Image 1 (cartoon, rainbow, N blue to C red):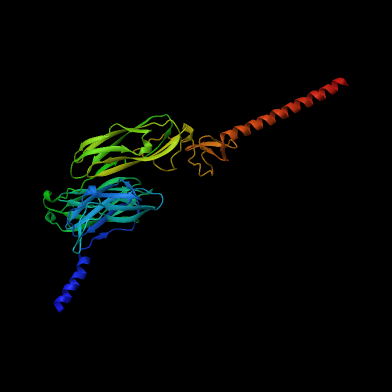
Image 2 (image 1 turned 60 degrees about the horizontal axis):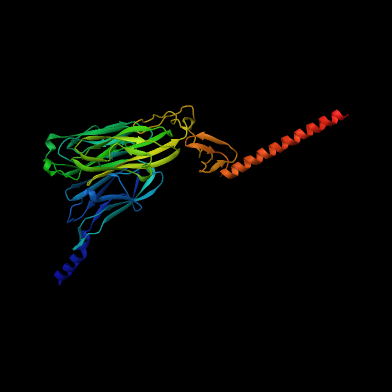
Amino acid sequence: MKKVVLFFLILLILPFVSSLEISSQPQYKSEETMIVKISGNFLTPLQIDNVNFYRAHVKVPLEKGLAKINEEYYIYALLPEVTETKNYSLKISGSEYYQGTQIIDEDIEVNFTINSLRADFNVNPGVVVENRDFSIRTQNLINNQITISISNPTEISSESQLILKSGEIKNIQFTLNDIQKNSSSPSKIVLSSSGTFYEIPVSIFSTSSQRDNNLTSMRFSPIEINASFVKNSEKTKTIQLTNNGEKTITDIELSLSENLIPFVSLSRYEISELEINQTANIQLFILSDKAQYLEGAINAESKDFSTFLEISLDVVKDFNSLPIPIPNSVIDTTKTLEDYDSSKNSQTCLDLNGTFCESGEVCENNDSTNIFGGGCCLSLCISEDNGSSSRFKVIGWTLLALVIVILIWFFLKYRGTKK
């Protein structure tokens, strides 16, 4: 009897013992590095090309990586910049895992949000599987200098802290202690500032054959472009795509967001092979014949990986419409293409409670002012026909008044002569 009861208890408990476990935060900061741990009894190993990110139902290319340490998978991604809270999801397709005695082949989905509060810094990679000295790339994302504290496991040596200026990028070098190079136990590197905290999983092994080949990464440099320039002035910039992973990447395709295609072109749209630490140069050509604001991205995709470079273009109608830098700030010329006019202030049309008139509209009181973005109307925008009609009315009344004045002058002159 006791054996029968025990048997049924095991059947009840078993489905919960082998179910999938996901360690993830419900909310992340803008541009933070997301690190997710997934534990489960998988029949088929997870692959990086099956890991994708979505905003609503739209696929978003993010710089990402995947590694397996013991029986747990770690996924990391460099999240995008947002100006308001947005809903995102991580989806893993093509996986099979046990849930108790059942085999589940449904997509794994992790929902999360990204808020507008910017992380102090990000890290790349977000998980390390190594048998030699390595480095972790960090970048300061905020407007002031930060100090990053570094805490290592015993088998790894590095500096204890790192100071980063605003926007600065530095690699933290980590050295493996000789007596610990045969250690394969997982551990963590902790990087923290006053507002951001990372625990980076680390696994040190003895032979290179144990390396997880999924640790592959490529990255654009610069990481973004914010360009301001005058219409009809062609701009050229060299961007770079680097393989900073651990295996050669092949058959890379480059593409532009659809709204950028009429105004932006690339010197190449395919890269057949990118070896470890190799960099490919790509020429970016920009030309617009009208004042406008454009946003988009350059996407790089291979079978195993994808990344993107965000582009924001402000095309203004003349040199006097260009902005000036924020006072006491340093322009990062690696991100920009702009021609700044230091004689202008940096007020926007929104700051002046104005609006940009649409095509076919004019400023009612003719009080448009040239600022960043073009002509800002400080009164109301009305249709060009109404504007023309109003002007004709003014001209008509002016002419009528002039005729009346002339008639009165002739009348007075005539009376004087008659007398």
